[in-house]
Amino acid sequence: MPEPLLQLKDICYSYHSLQMETPALSHVSFHIDTGEFVAIVGPSGCGKSTLLSIIAGLLLPEEGTIVFHNPDGSLHYPKIGYMLQRDHLLEWRTVYQNAILGLEINKMLTQKNTDRVLQLMKDYDLYKFKDKKPSELSGGMKQRAALIRTLALDPGLLLLDEPFSALDYQTRLTVSSDICRIIRKTGKTALLITHDLSEAISLADRIIILSRRPATVKFEVPIELSLPDDSPLASRNAPEFQYYFNLLWEALSDEKI
Amino acid sequence: MKKYNNAPAKELTRQEAFVRAHKHYHNKISLCRTLIFILFLALWETAADLGWIDTFFFSSPSRVLLCFFELVTGKNLFLHIGITLAETLISFFLVILIGMAAATLLWYSSGISEVMEPYLVILNSLPKSALAPLFIVWLGTGTPTIIVAGASVAIFGSIISLYTGFRQVDSEKITLIYTLGGSKWNAFFKVVLPGSIPTILSTMKVNIGLALVGVIIGEFLAARRGLGYLIIYGSQVFQMHMVITSIILLCIIAMGLYQIIQWVEHYYKKRM
Image (tube, rainbow over the protein chains, first blue to last red):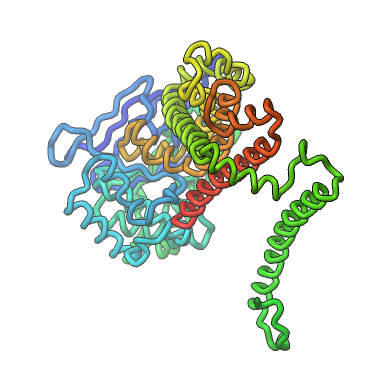
């Protein structure tokens, strides 16, 4: 069996203030295999975003270890793409200039990389807007532009921190299915945080349920939907969908007070 | 002009009607502004000519104009204007340069900014004209003193407002830079600086006026040339025409400098 791409072992993290220590994560352990799409659900405020920040390297865990195994066997840390809740496109840059922001910062503005960004923009219907300002795009297009900005660095692992939560319901359904399609097509490994159970079931291969703060892994469910068509919208009609929904709903309801 | 066109206003679309009303309103505003100016000049001139006010103390538009030409030929007025303008611009650019550098440092290190905060607050609320005599003793009478006096009026306020502006940049946008693998300097140059351009421009607008104030204070105390010197000299020899002419020239300079920054701002907004 190949080693998982990402392995978390006993991750602990607390926030400190002068008055008190607030534990956010307590002995969180799980793994993600290469090419998997994993969703994490949990009660609101349980420390999901803290977990992503730790995986992304923005925070250091107080205890525990994180191990990455690169598929090519090399030892260097795989690049991690982190998609935040809001698109945060910079208003003074064009859509294209926003998309190459990461390449610019990492001094990777080669012909090959910029061509790839332009190709991504063509693939996801943004090419004709490449010289427009972000304010001229719709919510869904902005989110796609933000995804291209993340993918431009060719990350080995994609972290998605409720990337659809700022969108209205209708846009959200189409954008989440769009983005899922893009991620699956590029064969990226992805970790999605969400509080929307239907979204988690329709998008993910496996769901990790976190407990109330301090968060720890309650259990994991592999999602297997018997549908030939794998699009997230269609998967909501799968016969197993309701079963998974109830399972998750009960698991989370136990956690509420 | 369109609005005196008496052709029957036939079938204006709503949009055309709106545009017309808008233009009409703005024409009226401009007209009122110009009228007030002309009325003021006319009243001033009439009052002087009819002896309601003493021209020795209050001068009059025609005497100001006359004095202007006398100053140009006899006293090399353009040299004085040029010197005041140059000193103002130099202290303005000094303020921008030092202000930006200091605000960047404060943004970069929260330790430094916390240490410096009380000093900045005190220095900012200090009346800077009180420092001018010190500058004269330290730097002598002349251009350096005047430039330093001009810069001192604006510098602390602009450090504080630039730093506040830098800090108001959305912290999640800074997190975005970190998630893309950027450093704190990347965050500064890609997000904080471009995001603060409106703040920088509005600080510049305030500063150009303050620099002029400081330069005139400096010229009052320590100059042999410049408009501030002409004002002081004129008042000492009871040449009120000279004083008032210089003040009017200062008005024009202040307006012109402000307008230049307004243009820069306009150009920036159009590009956005």
